[in-house]
Image (cartoon, rainbow, N blue to C red):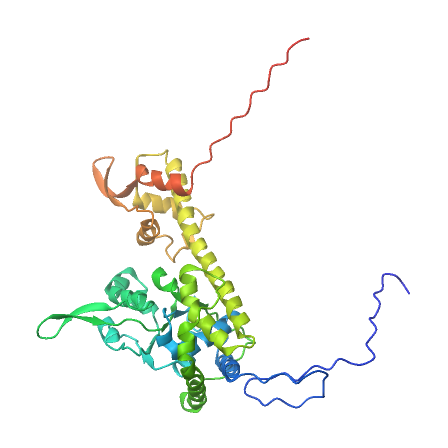
Length: 413
């Protein structure tokens, strides 16, 4: 036989027999006998989590297995809200329409604890609906609340409510009643928000983030019909409640080991605690999902901040191209940036980088345009070079060229 030809491995005399695999929602078919003790049956917690994951998978396509794990555990965690110190948000976001965001919210609505739909609801109506046994807030089309700067400013109270409600004992104060007395209203409640594009940073930072994508042509899911499909989802919800209610005290005392720290740990701790209560493969799945998804979001944040640094660098090049004037018009700066095809600015929006977009990107650096005087006593919006000096020095300092050592002069013998 030619030595380059791989040899076929010899088969064992006795074929390997694998135990039957449990498929959620189906009885396990009896298989051939295997050596060793019978495997222990799955606990009710382990099984109901597996069944919930299977139902979610039936109706939506999520970006990865970690996302299925996260959504499953988040839904289960809503049934023990009063046991948690933090109420994680579930941010269901996607780059465009028809990514399955609303469909996922449909499934979640029928399985969480006491769902409260908050489409177009005012912040006052929402916090007056939160009690000592909080509902689960569900906000579809959240991008309409926070999409533009003008709309976001109008809904600042809602954003504040969602931020405060992430942690226990952060009530909102209102003057109410005929005597104008100060009253405390609780804000603590778990919330799921679905929308196009990222939500405000303060909400994303308190969220388990599910980044939806459109289905490929070959990816199929079942159609969701409320009348037909709700009963089976409600049956799952009832099983979750029956399993978790007796575990409330145990859940309150749990301090699960977390693979992350700080706010990420606060947000994911209820999900990991649910996994530990469920047992089986769930503790490992939960921690793997936590680590992978928080690392992905950290990279997203780094990429976003990197865009700001890229802008600082390109503005410095624009000043240099103009001969480093002490002041430059905003219109001229944008013209230079948007004409450079090697930068992201021409495609930043349909109209390139706009004055508003420029202002937002520079806001974190404390830089804003103002009325300036230019040649001919003309007044227009602009920036001074001095405004950028501190940020250039901190975030993108120019490299100092290393002096080339002067070679020693050769001496004669």
